[in-house]
Length: 488
Image (cartoon, rainbow, N blue to C red; front, side, top):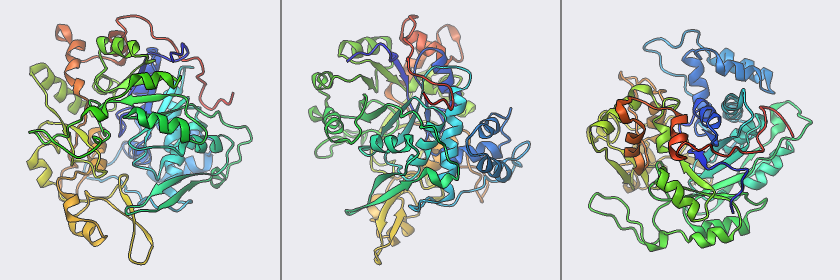
């Protein structure tokens, strides 16, 4: 169903911090739906402060939050006037736990608020927030912070986020909400967030934003539509050509000569089913072209979600030297993007750009000592005493096996948490010297950036992307946006 209140273009919610507030703000100004990434946002928040918060936007957002004491405490703890010293590492946060009152939850809540408040500042156009189902522990806190800043849409993929609509309903009334966390081997645990723990009573209810799950199959759309308490307002249908995590192929695993998973007929989307649901949907993954947008609309889609073209624009949160390196490589010739079935600790296929100096190089990967000090993608398990614990297939092999994991599950696993932080310019300094190497993810449409650099242009903007995709036509503007902190 096409709804004229929704735009044709949704910007991808690329993490960590590639889809930052500046990019989302620029996309919204160009007439699309700007989206911020909520993945790792607590770490991003404190690293920006430790880097000196150039121009003061983070501190301005903190000062505008509903939690002044927490804002003051965060600033006092983490802000470094002029930034860290040349050899000073970032302060590390304590590991996430399932406990409801952790300091991490407060930081995640504030991170969600800051990112959305800044993305919405100065205009009344829509802003969305994107999160990963595979990184569940921070999600409720991030969402409550984003809702407190007036976020207009919630998007979530890399899993089946059936609990989110009900949680949004609950948190809109400032009530405690919970998510189901899966335990390896069976069972589950509850992830709980209670706004009352902030110590600040907000009388006015928050606006409950629409929810668009990111799915890889029409069968998941049917599942979400029929069995999701609270319901969904639309869908993002993501093909295997998109960047980041993709759903694994259905059925037995088969790979091609390059070791990439092979997708078959069972993975194809039935667009008639999507149309029959009667809700707006967007197509993502390989549709970030003028022809792709036209094809999506012909299939009944509202429009397209585009990540790759926005990832390399000037407003993107990607570290500038790395972005320039990629665009220079694109201008010279082909750039290889490989769907790696083993890179992610989650076990989901993950798109990786082959680029010198990144973890895509075997030598760079081998030289990095294995560690897990951020832990967003850890899996839950129970130990011999029945206690809930966490482990990551990218941590040291001996430690993973000691926690009951299988050694074969660690082969070729990469630390996406640290690698993606480095890609966004927040690389941790290592005790042995140097910094964490980046890992670069991208969709198959990376060569499409050439069309935005014609005539020898070295770079392009988010507005250029929207104009290119819509062939210069104005994109419809979402009609339900709100100012930061507003409660319609």
